[in-house]
Length: 236
Image (tube, rainbow, N blue to C red; front, side, top):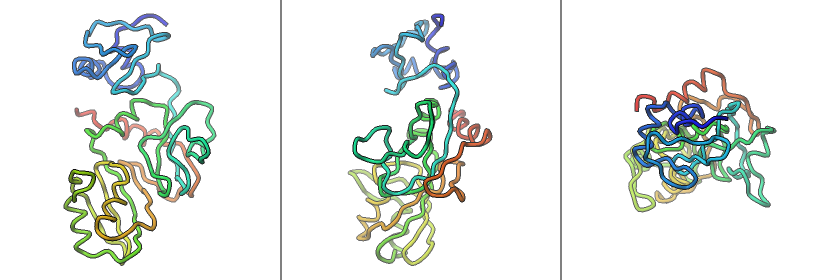
């Protein structure tokens, strides 16, 4: 493979347009062999140079895989965790894929897996502001005041959560739509309200819905679903 300009490499890897790649280089978000590169004319050898954006390695373009998995409880959202069952155990795939975002071990529901660094970046970076929707059941009844506090935003982990959409489903159940993804955020919110989560299930990520996919099963995303995810943040 011939030498090529860095912004072209980023574009051909499917991560972004050349124009956006140039902006990322100016912003110091791109490293080559561990060093930040701000020179627009920098060329790279795709076979030997290690290119990273925001600390994530950018691989040359390959067959893209996009999978929706219904994660069961008891599985760790990780590519490797000795002694534990991991989500990749549920998806037979010869190519290296990795989960986008996380669901804690006790949670269930929709998890996306891919080998597309562009999609991983767009769904993982907080600036893209996509929605994630969950169904939650608690140990004790949830008061109207608790629902209002979660919807308005509340302090956890030393800062305040962003406003959320919260809908009651039952005396001890509610649906919540978040536009952020802090560590165990919903469990921490519920705990700070004097309650405890019994079950937590993610049913949507952006435009992708879990639907009736059985627990432990997976399916490839449709071309339309992939296009909708890759369009996230294009206006930026």
